[in-house]
Length: 130
Image (spheres, rainbow, N blue to C red):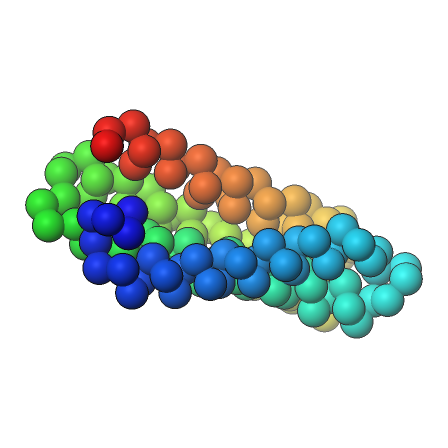
């Protein structure tokens, strides 16, 4: 990606992706029963870093010199996935605050993972051609 577009956006995206990886490692290292505050901070880093990286990478990938119609469709798909991710994150936050009943929080947490993995899966279509 960095070879095809301006290096600044991919580098910023990589930084947030690194923060995301650090957050995911910290979440795995400490469960909510051990240190709840650290678990929440780590989860915010993990999901937040990936959300920001998603948006930056999506913008960087569509800013190619001559984006193809397929690249534009992929950008639209990424926008929908990112939107669903942000809606799930919002509902998750409201469920944490007690606005929604108990299983909603866990469902939204899993949806965050699903949308994140689905978004990263779309990279497969960028990497098919050199």
